[in-house]
Length: 293
Image (cartoon, rainbow, N blue to C red):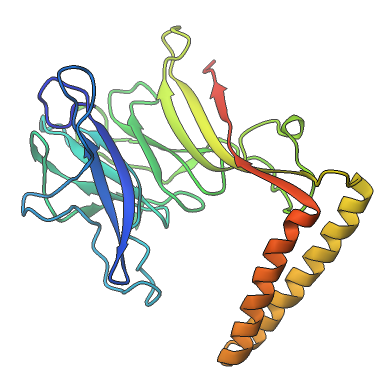
């Protein structure tokens, strides 16, 4: 995208930083250079000169909205049709905000919460992942999104061309994959489609004039440690799961006992380190292509 309208491609990304015990979701932009490379990433500021951040009331770990400003994805698009690029922004809880553009690379500092009717627009699950495009070909902009629970969701715009957007609540476009129980053997061949934490891109991949969807996911592949049979792996995994459950119950029961909490946390750390004795883990992800009919 050319966010500053200088004829060069830029890269826009969401991120978060933790400073002085505060967590804030920032937007980073890498401005394109004439030779096709990019300048060093810069924090994107509003027209007030301050970093663009979704505002919240609470401090980290306190209140009910402190994670709302952790941006999971910004998408630059002329949402309101005024000729300026705006930012449609997803966040950790799965809701969305709009920073209105004021000209090349400039945005109002205060965002608007996006809604479906009178309710906040929200995906099923968490991690709003907006991709803004006219999905149904009716001349207005819709929003597609991945989410923490997987799959792809679609918020249809019912406004029509040239009218203020009127979004419907998200509905399922591509079903999420099956729930995978942690601690069981999971290999490449076992996976038949995208699982959790999906991120999407929409494009005409095969050039047939129809929009297709690329879906990235996250998965932890698990196999027995070297020299361990699958039967022995299952036995040790069951024992480990039982011990983890007991440690979790003790931590919950000792919510007001700092000493007991510390002891339970130490037990969790021990269990975490013990996993490598019977399992191999590979945190990875796959990209899946859905060709539109």
